[in-house]
Every structure is written in structure tokens, then in C-alpha cells.
Image (cartoon, rainbow, N blue to C red; front, side):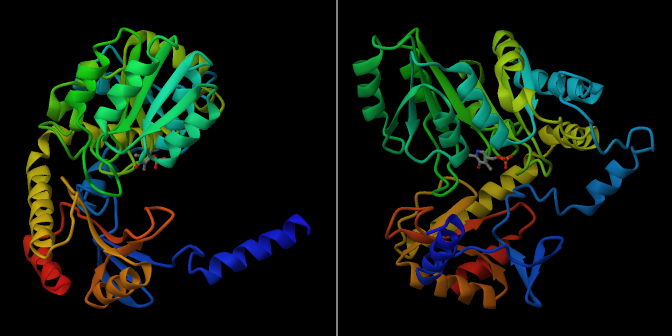
Length: 384
Ligand SMILES: *Cc1c(COP(=O)(O)O)cnc(C)c1O
């Protein structure tokens, strides 16, 4: 069979198992999406603070633009001629906010996670990664020459045992986790992870805050700020495409790590840097972050309302955040429930295997700060 015939066959099989994916047609209108002429409140977006839907914020930013600073391309890698001053300003702002020696920005979270681990690890490295880490981290691990063991989700007892078993066999061990997990909305115990790694002098900690940056902590710096352990995390990574309403990613770290990445990280070196215009927007939003505590508190309130309602209705709800899964179980039921909610004007999407384990199909509510308490209460009524 030719490779093209094989593609046809595989796609056909996906279709038969109701797992064929396609790009949805939709029109965005502020907080709403319009799908097939039907207007719904978007409860599936990563615009956690509602900043992407905030027209006045864009107006304010537009007022700062002139033809001289409206720069839609960097035309080069940052190591050649692509290093515009706005990059340095953003990195200075980040290291100032986090109180770290250095910061480095990347084109996306995917670039960050597929680039950092291969750069900093070798065959004498063991990576211990949470079972539920994001695909970009998995790909980073695959691209590295390190050996990897996945530990059960948030199972620090197993992690402790693995550290004991292997710490003398390897030059270094890197623990890799997310802080706030995207499918269950639960959090890693960062303080306990820091205590564990501090028992060894060859163990480093890598934390991905994609879903927590902007949302958690007094100044919106993430779960590490919330736990008071920013300076204990060796590779503290976050992204700008979610709560920050922009694109790109960062690491805050020691100077030596930054300099090493600039020299060794292939997804940093061999790509055209993000447009200065986009970086200016990121900086504009990041500078406002610490003043957005009311939005964070409102979002946390909405999250706990929905969690409580689900638990009262006997759902097993692992969420500790604004990401709230309603675990239904069978895929077909989940799809029906999602369609029901959509008919009532709530755009919530079903998540099925292989994204989540077999038998735990769910509707994943991703709440945003521009949703009202009344709307969440109405949603709860429709959950039944
Ligand atoms: C979204 C996400 C990424 C990828 O970030 P992009 O900027 O969208 O490429 C990485 N890690 C986690 C945990 C994410 O949720």
C-alpha cells in the first residue's frame, strides 16, 4: 500500500471511531463565538483574564503605535539581526517581576518546551516527568538524549522513590511538571517538589506555568509566586498565548542558564524571532498584570462556584482552579451533554480519549474573568 493510500485508510478508521478531527468554522465576537449561525458564550477559551476579548485594551495599545514602531516582522533570528530593543525590555521586565537573574523569551510554549530540555540534558541525564505533562514537554523529552521515566500524576511518593533509586546513577536528574494541569485543573504541590529536589545536589526542577501565568499569585506570576518558591525552580517556564492574550513564551532562570540556551537551544537559534509589534503588545499586557488582582479573584470565585456545584451533584471533580472538568465517562454521553449545553448557549467542548484516559470523557469548562456569576449559575442549572 502506498503512503497516500495508507493516509486514506487511517483517516477512514478515525472517522469510523468518531475520532476524526477537523478545523471548526467559527466567528469570534468578544466573549461569544458564532458557530453555524448559533451564538454561544465561549467556555472553551484560554483567554483566562478576558484580555483578548477586551476591545478597550486594544484601543489603548493602538494609541501607542506609529508607523515607526508598528513592526510586523523581525526579519531574522535574534542571534543575527532580529534582536529588537523591545525584546530586551520584555526580558528586563520579566526578570524584575520574578526577581530572577535573567529571563529569555521564545516564539511559543511549544518552542520553549521542545528546545530547553534537549539543550540542557545529555545521556548522563535522567528526566522524571509527571504522567500528565503537555505534549510539547513530551516532544522535548523525545528530542533529548536523556533517559526518561514518567511518574504517576502528582504522585510524589513514587517520585521520591525514583529519586532515591537513581540519584547516584546519573550526573543530573531533571523533574518536569506543570504547575496547573490543563485537563483536570488541579495543581502540583510545588513546595513539596522543591523540598524533594533540595535533598539532592544533582536534581533540577522544570515547571511549566502555561495555565497559571497571569491567573495565580498576588501579581499574576503563577503558582510559583503563590507558593513562594520562584527562586527554587531552576527552569520556570510560562506562555503568553493564554491569560496574556498574546503569543510567545518565557523562561526565568539564572544568568548561566540563559546564556547556555542562547548558545545551545535549537528552537531559539534557528527561527525568526516574533514580530516586535507582538512583543510590544506582550510587554504592554505584562506591565498591567499586577493590577489585575480583581479579575483573578473573580475568576477564582467562578471556579469554586462551579467545582462546588459539580461535587454537590456527585461528580468527581479534581479541579482546584478556573479549569473545571465535568467527568461524564462514556464518550457518546459526553458528546450529547456538550451538545445540550451548546443548545442553551454555552460553548463547552467534549474531551475524549486519547487526550484523556479511557472512560473519563469529560466536558472541559475553561472559565474566563469576563463571565459573570449569573452566567455560571445559569450554566449550573443546565447541568441539572
Ligand atoms: C498551551 C501550552 C503549551 C504551548 O504553548 P504555546 O505557546 O501555545 O505553544 C505548553 N505547555 C502547556 C502546559 C500548555 O498548556
